[in-house]
Amino acid sequence: MVYGDLQFFDIIIFAAIAVFIIYRLRSVLGKRTGFQKKPADQQFVKKEPTQEKKEIKIPQLRENEQKLENVYKKIPSFEHKVFLEGAKKAFEIIITAFNKGDATTLKNLVSKDVYKAFEGAINDGSNNPNSQFYSLIIDGINDAKVENGKIIISVNFISEQILSDNEENIVKNKDTWVFEKPENSNGPAWTLVST
Image (cartoon, rainbow, N blue to C red; front, side):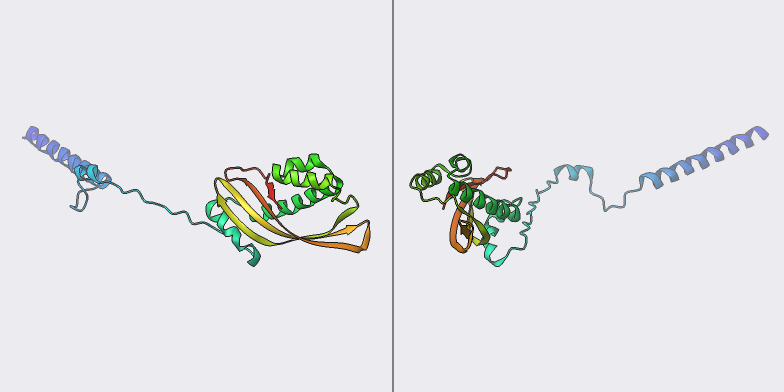
């Protein structure tokens, strides 16, 4: 009688252990509720590629710089402030080199056609070594575009130059210069292609 009670007691313990294990497995693994997709269905579901449109952030431009939007739309990494600063410095360097007759400096900054024009003017004596800058401002962007793999920007300059250190002898000029550089170039170097 005692031996039979022990077997019955063992069965109850094993049943309790089995119930506990089943309970723990369900809490860890979860159970099907009928709303999950069948594994066979998931194999055939095609995810359509989502086309993410990158939003182009165009910085705030002045009214006379609005045409630079054309460049930002094609080259989001373009920085107009860096370009305008560089254009202003290039103008000063090129005009100073022209006035001094420094053809070597000009050759590195301008296209072949522009170089020939400057060289011809220097040979004719049209440059004035005694003139120096009094003021220089960028009066706006005349045109800006990206085409044929190049960024092309036309800049309007207004400059004043003093002749022979005489502040009463100031010459004011308005110029439109066209700068360009390859679209894929990360360097700061632009070339003057037209004056």
